[in-house]
Image (cartoon, rainbow, N blue to C red):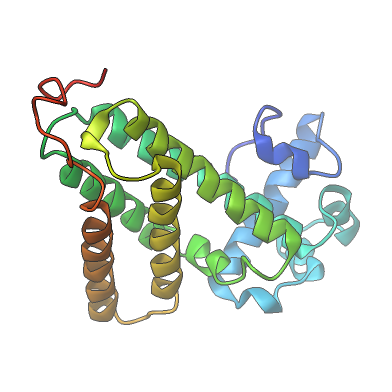
Length: 229
């Protein structure tokens, strides 16, 4: 989240027009990001301007343009900032899982549930999902996120986890993440908690039905008692 100073090792730093070197500059950048995130949660994304961000952050609008070429670039940076937390959630779920004949549903369910709760707790991310196709910066940020998560899943399956068989792990992983993102984008438009819960239940069923075509398709003996080769 943008409450901590930006670090120069994060990939998203390449999106900055200028990298803050001094403490005051880092604080100003954080103020801009915090202001933008607050505005995303309060307003429709289309209503947010660089002037509004500058006013909320208490900085000149020139400071916004020093780091970002436009509002879409700010949104892309925020999106990638939150993506780092999403990747951390997935990594934790995968690290805590044990390979086995039946556990893929538990692993998948844990990832889906943790990510959904993360989005519920970060409504700004949901709202950003609704505008991800509106600019090249945002499309690129979303594509990078989908690719990174898909790579994590396909790498797991290529190592022999979950009994993957019958398809291309890269393609299946990509479709899995695309399904999740498309339904979560729909969830972003739902205000009623009951309807949201029902939509999430359908997401779980859809992903389990799709993944059951490819996971645990070989015998436990072929899996080497659940251990990847």
